[in-house]
Length: 479
Image 1: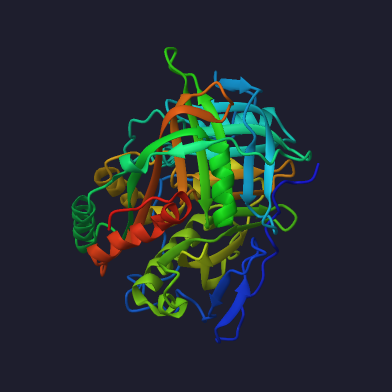
Image 2 (image 1 turned 90 degrees about the vertical axis):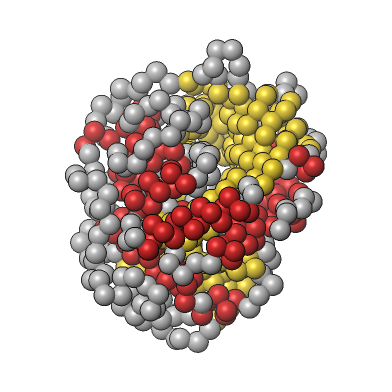
């Protein structure tokens, strides 16, 4: 069976011509303008705003005091009792995730395994599950709340959302029905975090930065409104209207409460790649994204913005360090230091590309142990930033800022960062396995806070990132 995601490309050298150039987004056959300006190195030539300018570029962010624990891969066939469901299940969807076309790939879910939030070593459970079912396609949804099981110094938050949803699946090759089941939202009951609350948290984050606790932190807030009907139809509507680079949809029922089954749907229209792995070249690639401006503005302005450049430089350094923990010596390279891409004619965003060669005998859970959660949605240093996030954010992130991973039988995979992600949670409808009788739709949005952040501008950036809801769902966000 053919892989349902394309493996990462072989490492390439960045363009040495410092002139601005226009390229095409690999995901999109519709034109998505990309501004790419090659520089010598984002770390060796940092902006004045980069706090690492006087530090050696091999500086490490402490994670745990020990290396990746061997317990991640032990007892490959000992699987704790998991909540497992067989078909019928809704069809999952991939839109992008390494594909070179703008088509949506349907996946037949054969079996869903839920690794609950009570599991104290969910990565070991996941590896045991993968070892027990080798040579399969998997769709893995990782919650951001998995992070405290990796970083023990980050407080655990109470949440009912599972750590990991592991779905064994196969690609569907038969034509899919074109008729879309109905869905509806109630924009009159939309709830948006008060602006004053978010700005107060930004100011608190700036206090932490001034005190030297952190250099950067990603602060988010939720937007919620009621939802009814087919979540898969909503996903197809969003994919058709946004053409995401890293789009995905999945749905599952959580029966852990004997008195009530809760249905969850996760729709991601993310533009950001977390990790890709090509086993042919043994190359691991990450593409962190930091820096946003409205699509109506000139992308050159974003490229020349020193604050946004500093944000990305910090995360480049963090991700280089994370990759170095599982890569062969001196193999971690920044192959594209900064590129501005336009997404859905709504935002420009700055992205870097970092590649490395994996150490021998490194598996998926080893990689996640070293790199999860993605640095672009935490901050730097990562552990302290996550602690501050837990303190300042009033709600748990759940699948938002986690990752969706499409894993192939040959161990190639493509992992997204679950930003621009909708989480629907509520009462199942008997109409279909993806439908809701009543539910709440939650969409988080956030911004990276650094020393020279303006709280008002950071609030506006969160609304810019949520503007996709206005254009696709016909709702209005309070300004």
